[in-house]
Image (tube, rainbow, N blue to C red):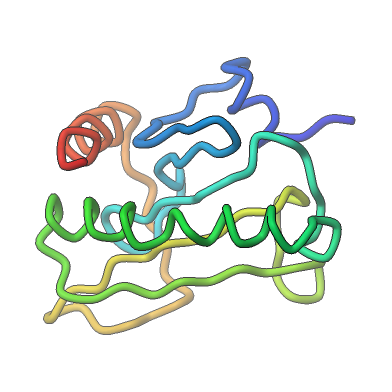
Length: 134
């Protein structure tokens, strides 16, 4: 199977990692909705959250508070959104389970459709800053 996230996890593709444990990684979204937009991804490939056990889903989501806290501390965001899509019709672009943490800023608003394309260097700098916030 050819999976972009599996390639990022195995370091075959570039990823700007901010967190890793035995079962998960978190890295900056390459096309963020807002600065600091992170994806939490299980290391094992699952297409949909319904393919995972209850325990695996719980472990995945248990990472959200600590990662969101580090992102907010680093970026100055005042809030965050959490999203998780299942299936093409639900706007799941990459068919590998992932949870979005999208920081929100007071002067920007919560726009879901805008995306930016930061440089690899910008993502490197931000990932290092967030990692140091844990």
